[in-house]
Image (cartoon, rainbow, N blue to C red; front, side, top):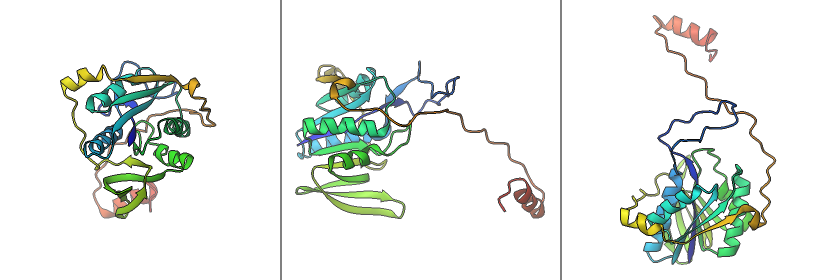
Length: 249
């Protein structure tokens, strides 16, 4: 069985995001970029499934600019077998990403697709669900535990009410939640070996997929700064300020 795992190049989570001067988006020039943390968890889960003998190959896939090869190489250093980059400099929406992954699913015929539940740059949380709708594959989102049961998967999901266990048939799509696992660190020998692992670059135009979108970013703004708090001298003063200034009662 093949496993396709998605990896996205995003602004490093330790870097403070800054809005561009023209408010067209987030400033990405000369800042540290890294793999989306939820995608690291997805890669780790795919590798554990392979190591348990349930899969033969893990394919790391990214959609983005040529620099995304670095992100794929990170996944290869962790243990993925090969990588595929669908290269584009456009800022694609989740539906376009799902269509491109559908193209690869039809080409590679994987038994499992593992994605991070969301990317920390846009927080859309849509690609896995859209890919399931496009391919007809079963889906198990927000996975915090994955177990094999014959030709089915038993997945524990994190939901608002607590934990939910479901069983889905293969082939399937899983989106990884935060508590699914702890990603491994890539060791230096594996980092060196990753440079020799195959990485296929496919221009987005060669896929024949329509990636046009009806959405556009009008403006990006930083959140308003919080005002300093104040100390009140009595309950009556607190109630007055909540009623007349905050207008919450």
